[in-house]
Image 1 (cartoon, rainbow, N blue to C red):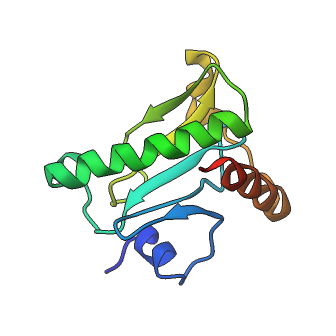
Image 2: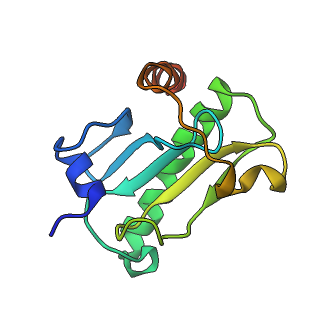
Length: 130
């Protein structure tokens, strides 16, 4: 059975896509901790991030770096933090979260922006991708 993220990649579930290439896909978290909170996933459905082949894992991080730079340009912050928990969806993924302190990184502080707000956030990040 396909994971939620595989269904998003296939277009079966709508998302606010930020970027994709042949191997990776990035989209906004619909319950972000902060504006710009983005999920980055490999298109290959593998549950645990450290079960990815080395080249796929390295590529995931390099793809994430481009996105993190765009997120930081769109939403100025001290840094874009990376969280890999992997419990929410059985599909390897990275959270990129604009943040200024460790206290900013609580999943208990999630928000629920409107679809229109998410669309604008996605547009702002895409505009900063080079």
